[in-house]
Length: 254
Length: 221
Image (cartoon, rainbow over all chains, first blue to last red; front, top):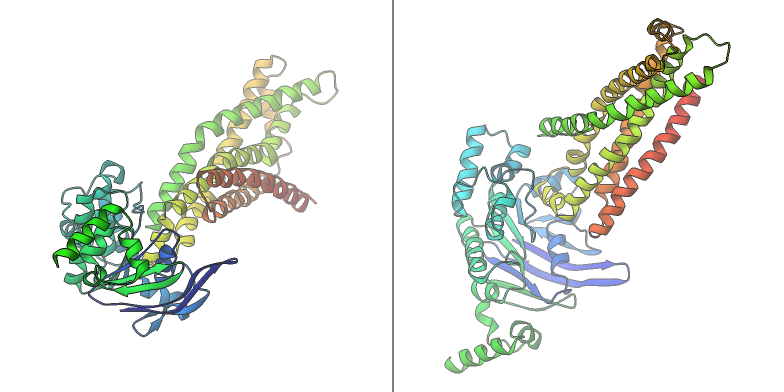
């Protein structure tokens, strides 16, 4: 579980986050949603410790991320995996070397053990047999899956994903969502996903944090979205006339 | 991982730069000889001084300074672009989240590689530069092989070689650290990356020349 407490963040005079209190629950797919510029990425970067908040705390269980020293932070990061929007795969390394990188840096596993673990992770993301290819030789969806494989290779307790569906076709996006959701349940970890994707919200959003103008505008689960009276949520989720129509049909049927 | 990365950097800096260093220093040595032959004509200075001048110019100044300026351009821009590109593609963020000490992982192998390889390149540059001077001298027709070799063996102070290596190590540190700094702290997009790369080259060359002057004053003063 990760809990934020009164998170404020400013860049110069511009206040991006204005007191975010939220609990990201264990073994659930937690989503941070909101319009562009709402502060989603900043909040995600604060959660993983890439940016320090101007004020507030991020609690990983009993540990305050903002109060950890360099070594404690490094220990905590060993328990964190992250999938980046642009995948952040190292171009000069093969897929296997990319996935193996955290093991090479932090473990004393033998080459055989590392190879087995790489194969296991590739199997988890249904990408067997691409070990020797380079990131540029596989598709965007496959790169996302390699990114996930690298993120879970050290069996993290916390998994973060920054817009995992961006640039993917709807079918591949669903596959990625399902994969992240399955890993969350199977590994019993806390997963936090930053997304714009309405399909993700409705399919895997077990615990949703809606940001609007730097504030927490709504929280709840996907089952509560349709009937929520929160106007900011409704404006965000059903922004297009097509989705509005679908919502009305769904409500009339229920 | 650090070992493999250091070897890769040594290969990039060394093998990747050897050709240009060879060509530039061959002509620098040749031009030094031709210019000195022109200065010597009609003077009462002994002819064998040609070898002495070419040797000391190469060892003390030209080989190390020209090589470092070339490397500030070639290696400096390469390092700044590589690290800056990693910053922009979130590779550095990814490493930090994994718990990797990125400044150490990205900078140290490059620094160590440069500190090992650049003095070797400077040694090659000095030999090539003197060889260039020798070829130009002999082809001028006014000087003999014996005269050049006699000059090459005259008034030799081993300290000039020490000075060359001191400069090589200091310049290697300057080129690499400035380029790494510019790349590591790049912000923005491709325009800013280009600017960082340019700054790495410009600042690298300027600081190398300032350091060259300071070292010359300190070691010969």
